[in-house]
Length: 274
Length: 219
Image (cartoon, rainbow over all chains, first blue to last red; front, side):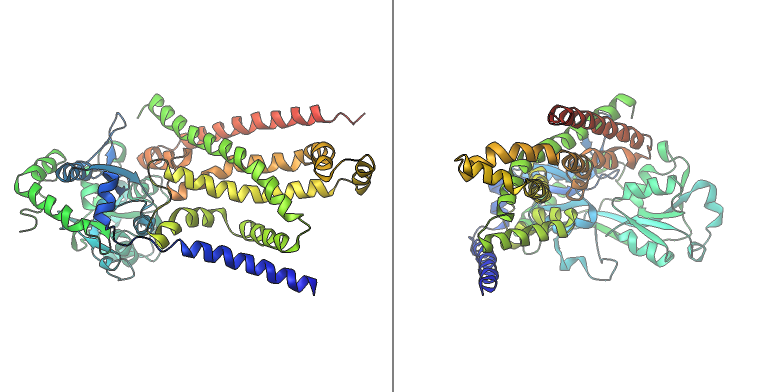
């Protein structure tokens, strides 16, 4: 009897703890996302380190097209932009928990690799850069890969949750999801995998030079073209404000200047928001 | 990237690792004592509640707890508890403190229960209250007895700190992966190993010293 009573009381205590937690939920829903961001005075962009969008220069400063783009938009809105390196596969958790305010890192407008449209998870801004996925192999093996079929059975890698992941999946069933695109390059260079799928804008900036001189872009496979956009929380009113700022920066040529700096002039979409 | 740049980056990461380690210890050691009181509490409902909590915390991966602490409050209540640049670190600290205090509590409990009944009776005869008995007679002997299992747990904690990378805390492995490994530089991994070896080596010496100092009843 005593034992039953004590178990009952324990259960009651657990229940009351849960109830106390749940009662915290009654929160002021009138504060919109945009107001919350303005109260903070800054917005946090979730990024992965990836040239030429967001990367560290020799002095350890964060630079890149998306870095400067976000800073320009922030200036336009009277805010400041902060950058947080995240695990790309946790991006929606980061966004929905409020740890970051937007996914701004060469984020592909399109579908997840399970075919679910990303618009189910986020609200997209205007798209601003043209991109496509591209396959990279070691330069020494380049001759082996002459068609999409030649990748069958080879080991591939792509960033988990990225657009490249679905391409890698189609090429070969034997592929690994890594936490960032830059890690895919390391996998390939170290010989852990035979091919990787990354953004063509990144490949153009890195492959075949410097640390990655022994890698080469494969032209046998040409995946579909895609575009980059910024992802915001579903239903956020901040999206429209950023869109207005982007339109203005596109009109007054600021975006073109930044794009030219990172050799992305050809990829930039003209007259955004028209 | 040259050697000194890599060194600076790794040191900044190791600083985060160390502060996570020390802060976890500072908070978890006393909190473990509190949890232990719950575990040995004569009031049964509280005892069952504490046992359930310890079961949940010890029974689920620390990685899951990190995710829950950092992401779940923001998702459910739309207000992130851990904002700002140090938010991730605080979230990791909370998860680590909760996790480790449960392990510590069980070690403490083992220590307390190993003290013979006769000592409590003797203390009672001498007119000591229960609180006095615990803090003046039992606790010091417990410290002595649990030193070896505690050193185990503390050393595990040093290496567990690297789990904080799953919520993007800038500890040494995270810094290495994001800033260095992503540039296809491999050797810092071994260098990091040296950091940990030295740190754990120092801790081992410290525990050996403490054990020697506390072995005053041995002949």
